[in-house]
Image (cartoon, rainbow, N blue to C red):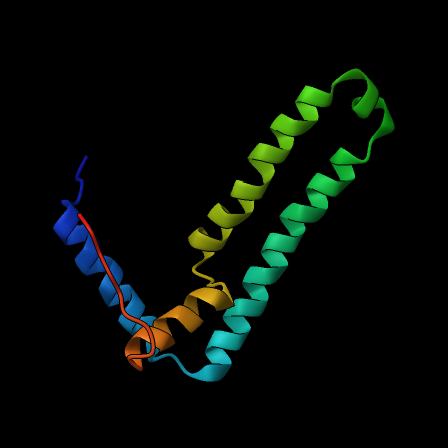
Length: 106
């Protein structure tokens, strides 16, 4: 299995960030909307499971474990589909326009 060195990973991340920075605004908007829908689907799934009175009484630890698994699942689905949360795009814009400085420590 191939793995990237830290230097290669930083290079790939910076290329990805530069690509996001030059996306058209409507593409960013649609990508952010789809990512928000995916994340809200994961949150709604947790709410459906988490509000079960029987599970709250009988297995409160199970509810916490399911919650700890479902929210990251939403983030993984966002990454796998290629959608971008809007906050990531804002950060890239700030860095590209020199409003924020990117500090990487290895």
